Image 1 (cartoon, rainbow, N blue to C red):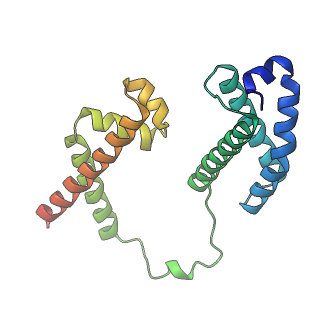
Image 2 (cartoon, helix red, strand yellow):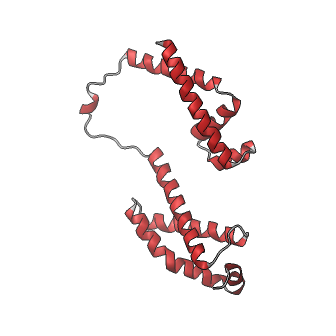
Image 3 (cartoon, one colour):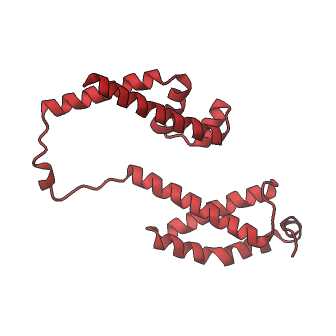
Length: 183
């Protein structure tokens, strides 16, 4: 079996045709099974093929055509998961039945409790250190990816993931300690 680098020189159109032939129908079926439609599938597939192709041309992918097909499918899945996650963050549903809210009257005490909780969280956030504040603010408030945060701070994506985890753990510990002190 020829290496992809050789095939690119000989016939890049043939590679792309094979990638589309072997993967597009599978991908459309996959997206329809997971809350999407054909247009979503085609958009993501085009993005995935483009990203994979650029990585192949830049030498960041090495392997044969079957491995390349698997690579394209994995990129598709990752892009689809990202899209589903972003939909779930921004999508909300209005309830027709408001009866479940009848017993939850907005009281001054519930607002006061929320205000106290927010102040406590703010105090904890200020105590976790500048690096933690920077990473958590970028990830949760600014909704930046770990890659974007890593490039901004000069760290690796893996180290930012670890830093984020440790900072959240530190925030939880501080919050629970202070919550116990305030009671």
